[in-house]
Image (cartoon, rainbow, N blue to C red; front, side):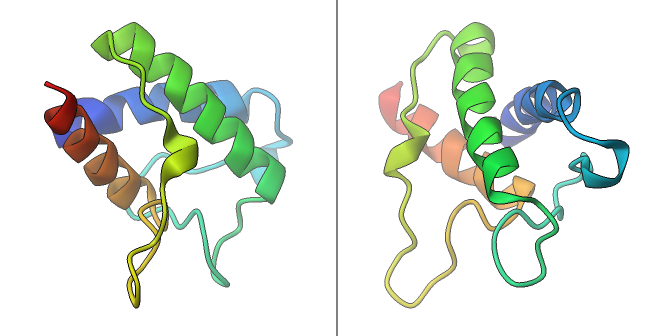
Amino acid sequence: MTADVLSTLYKAVDAVNMTLAEANRIPKAPDTVLLGADSAVESVALINLIVEAEIALEQDHGRSVNLGEARAPEGGEHPFRTLGSMASYIAARLGQAA
């Protein structure tokens, strides 16, 4: 399921990248850092990615997922730290909704 979700996230990345200058585009790789000091993703681009991901998830998986509810566990990393961790978080949420 995570690979399917990652593919959906890449569609969301494509949509966001169309609005960004080439130098600011988000790389499509599981280890792309979205949050933290080593992230090159601007906050507005991250918000747009979350919105585009919600739209793409609805289209590809037929389920509505509110990604604005994501929180880091106490003492842990935020689920949106990387594209890969975001995909794992979403896959788990979709599994719970099944």
